[in-house]
Image (cartoon, one colour):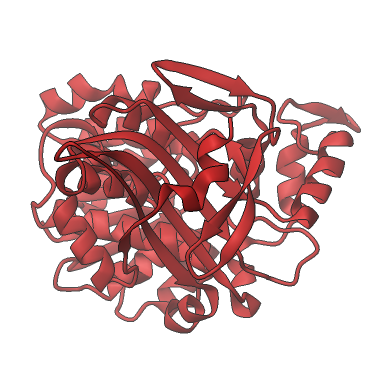
Length: 403
């Protein structure tokens, strides 16, 4: 296998394309397609080696099928919005091509993240003799693979997982989102939830918080929200008793978000304005800075990882497996801010696993179901080094005693 089709040329998709272009020993042929051709042409100019580009509407299965039949890729890497997951999967089924994405499907008219729609494709992909790899970004993606690695090598059983995500960067804008504004705002305004002792516990948005000490960043206030990898990890991590997801938000971000919610600009149901039906959140997206435009002046770091507690050889153990990424450094390397980088690099790395045959099978897989060792070894080579350190649970007492 040597040919890849990447769909989506946004902030993360452009990183994935550029990283693939830096690894021509794996990706001999690279084609980038997006609804907006101008974005593809910009990425094409910035790639280290030549790629081809075209326009495609990823909502239209027939257009994606036609593009796959023309370019004949071995793998389709879907870097478009979660709304497009099912149409692209349908096109891969029709053409018999492997599929990979970074975020699970979400319907446009409901802020509900679930793998159930994509898991329902398992038998059809298996019968077609192809594989679909779901959630190969950072979280989900790298974090899930960290958990799989820890399950194999660091614990006999993992009982507690706290996924912690801090962006301590500064971009100088009054209000902006680090990835697609629609998806970001839908994600953080929905009700939070976490899994404990076999049940999902729901909470009001941003109603639970605590201070968490992030490597190379320090203590930051973090909020308990729901995130999609929890849904699959509860099925794939042996002995799990609880899993939660925490994310940092600045006071400035939360202030703006509250105002936007109060005036109705985060609504996803249509309203009629001067006889035209518009979705307020889609309109807001057009007013906010493009995430890729933040890169040039971004400073600070992201610090993302999984704090895990469990049993090894009969002893209680706790560890922190994480990555720290510098915004200014990723801009110097590839012209991207760290949030885009930490999504696009894992996607390109996962694509390498499929192309090399290190990840194989038929059906639909979440990344933690696949061998973690070759992925994390390659991930470090591609620019995202990872670290494991044992921790004293007393150092994270506030986290462990919250909620």
